[in-house]
Length: 115
Image 1 (tube, rainbow, N blue to C red):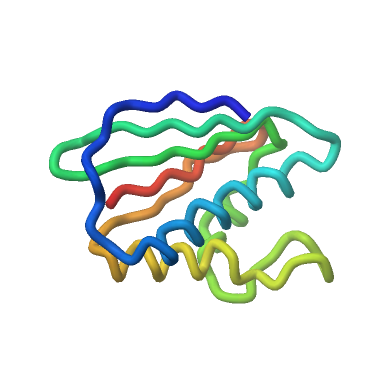
Image 2: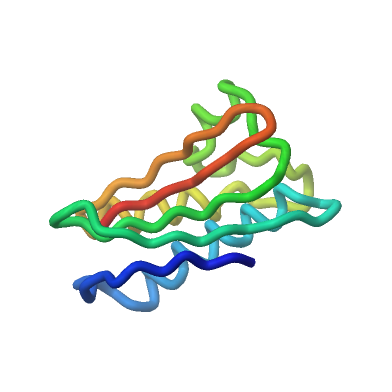
């Protein structure tokens, strides 16, 4: 995993919930690369927000999947997934007054959150 840290200010919020968001984003990236690959974590500031991007070298997703990625119980993982990880992350980020989005196309994907 690559990490491109920037100096960012502390974020006000529930630390356990924010850890859960990062965990879910990273696990989603791992699952997107069943044969291995690279995950990159980047942080930066877009005043007054702190931003985090988790990118992977997985296959990316279609527009149809991308539009539903935050829907509860939506999964592309069959019986392996519950479809709750990114949905829960979305709810947490919303409660913290931020936004979470996915930029992806087949062969690339970058879930990003802003708080």
